Image (tube, rainbow, N blue to C red):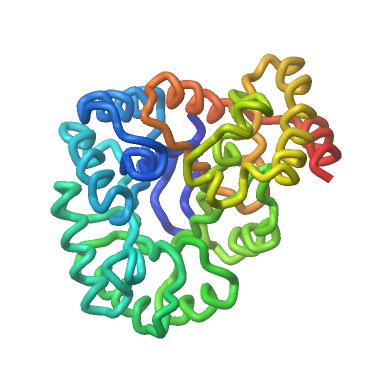
Amino acid sequence: MRMRRLGANGPELSVIGLGAWEAGGDAWGANPADQEVVRAFHAGFDAGITWVDTAEVYGKGVSERLVGAALVGRREDLIVATKVGPSPEGTGFRPEQVRAACDASLARLGIDAIDVYQLHWPDETGVPVEDTWGAMAGLVTAGKVRAIGVSNFDQDLLERCLPIHHVASLQQEFSMLALDDRALIRWCGEAGIGVVTYSPLGVGFLSGRYTRAEAERIDDWRSREGWTASDQLDEVFRVVDGLRPIAEREELSMGELALAWNIAQPGVTAAITGSRSGEHLRANAAAGDRALEQELLDEIEALLA
């Protein structure tokens, strides 16, 4: 597994990370038994994944608790990232709320310090981002957090944070099916801000596991967010069907190809892959060893265009 530094002075990360959103058990269907989720996480760690990303809102603490269980006996070898959300879904972005959320996450995770603590998405309740970011910086000073980052922010919000404290990372949706933030991700790389991408497998479609008919029957958050609308699926399967022969020729799974492409993009530090399956996590980790040639990247670019 290749390793990269997160931004200018963050921790070293494996280029494939483990996302624990699914382990919340409230967006992708109910969890299997706790010990099965923990075993799946361990399979990912054993395959070379060195960091895990979770959040307080994933199952209202369930995901953090399961990550904490998976850390037992392995904490020294792993980087732990989690997130505080704005109210009403999360604890809130007022300074005292950020501090309380951090303490609660530390308790659920069973650790003394969070390696990367992030703002989950922009606040819409009127709390100035400068106040929130100042509180995040205070957590670094207090030793409760080692680095601070953001998720789902735009360049304007990032530039408001930077004079207060360096932004270690941006976590942003990015895949062959979600290309809107390419320029922002490149800018982050130039500004010394690490970028970890989420949904690099295009909410599962780039794994190649779905037929068009199966995709139309999906009944989870993806259908509510418009991913299964007919015109959206037209574009999804234009890309998926174009990638399939490329993956076969290169002797890669569809997932490996999509992940290897993702971590080859300018500005990207690493990609987050979420699963409660040890088999899937091991397969995803394999992409961390594969560097794509420029000719192949150009071929994929022509397909995406």
